[in-house]
Image 1 (tube, rainbow, N blue to C red):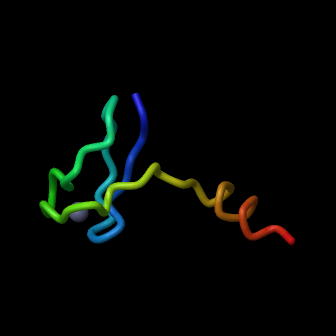
Image 2 (cartoon, helix red, strand yellow):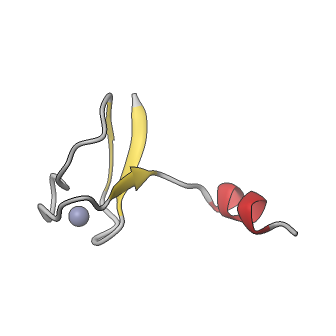
Length: 46
Ligand SMILES: [Zn+2]
């Protein structure tokens, strides 16, 4: 299972595959792997 999050409504859920639509707000192409605060810190590290 992969933890995913909608970039539009921030709804968090788990699925094996990344869906085309958000199951909550039905927006398309907004689903991304969920990032923890630590992931954001790692990415922005200079
Ligand atoms: Zn959504």
